[in-house]
Image (spheres, rainbow, N blue to C red):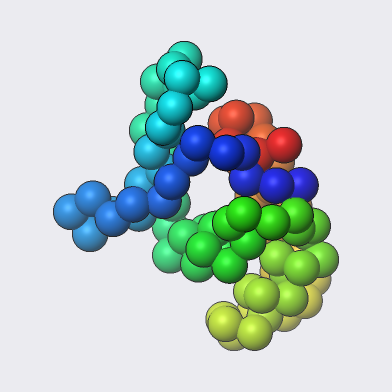
Length: 88
């Protein structure tokens, strides 16, 4: 999976928000706010391919979470990003 080109994570008034740039994202009318862990992961994998196992590893390295929970959360986040049109 990879974050689609044209999306940028920005800090807006202390909130991590994904902003769309470019004409390929002209129909993107959603405001996507990311929590701390999702923002952390976005920054770690932006611009490259990743999978749920890698996201889970990053979560366990940064947060006090067990591997099973991290993997479940990573898979859910990947689904959410794909459904929101942020990743492919």
